[in-house]
Length: 479
Image (tube, rainbow, N blue to C red; front, side):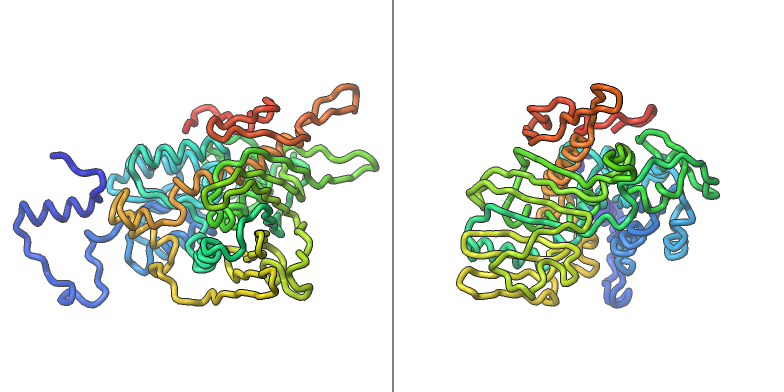
């Protein structure tokens, strides 16, 4: 019997049971208001059960609308709350074993450190499982492209965890721009107060005692093996290139999403960056190639698009750096969030559009002095628990169906967005490259504008930078 790939597994089972067994269906009102039959629930495997993984599990579960059947975490101390909340879920430390042994998994949430996103998601996708992956989608540009292609090849429903993409603020910004209110945009500024964890620090050399029960080998996954250290796990991994993607990876998919979505952007064509230096000795900056920098400024150039028919430059700042107040915005008005920690400014011909984190509090300042605002608290059109729950409902309906097409961060969109975010990190790592020409004398060949061929994932004018498009995996791991 051939099963249409667009038909969900549970829908097929239910229809087959009715047709072959003559089972009578009990009306839902007899079963009780709000009752969801088991056949209408997805079995979800939660991979990464602590921190953000716990909230992703809660949102996907959605008060019992889904079944959390597996919780997998290399550190069961971190997943303690998830184990308590879902006592019937099977417990695992190694996602490979979970996917191999539990045959009725329908969908998977991936909320692990950045360096393992791609290998976990690809393992699930290749088994036909729908996937929800935390931002940034991947650690490397190549991984993002491979996941995007695999999602379509295996026909699975996907979503990246940049929840602001499903918010009302971004939708209003699209309406304003599509109505031509600010005209064509040729300049965008995006900034964040991240990192709020240590960055620009020396690589640790001491060897603290391992946390009891931590499966360190699986935590390392495809990355280069290093000894356990609390500067890596459970939270500070974000500041190390071996595992994390720094401030850009943490907030780029949130803050670059509004301009990317509103303006219909694709692959950038150029990138240039500079980073904050750390001085311990006079005149000699520290060389810290393993650690992400304490601050950076990056500029991406994007070609004209159908929505925005002019080239534009997008400037990113982190480490507490931010753009100056545009003259059009009153001096006492905050730009971005009210605390100025994060924000977005899009400068158009007829005015300026701004927003804070997740596209919240969008505003327009027009050249004629008029100011437009939007109430973020308007009723949402999404199901409860929003971004995650919309993905669950799309999984139930199936690949290519209306709910899938309506998702705001399906990999068709999230993949190119992530590639653009990670292009900034490629530039930062290229900027940090150095060659010793004489004892204690160095050249820095990557400190220039880099020209990018997005289709072929190649830097055209500095081949050494291409090592950061795709990293080498540790032996025993593959995508």
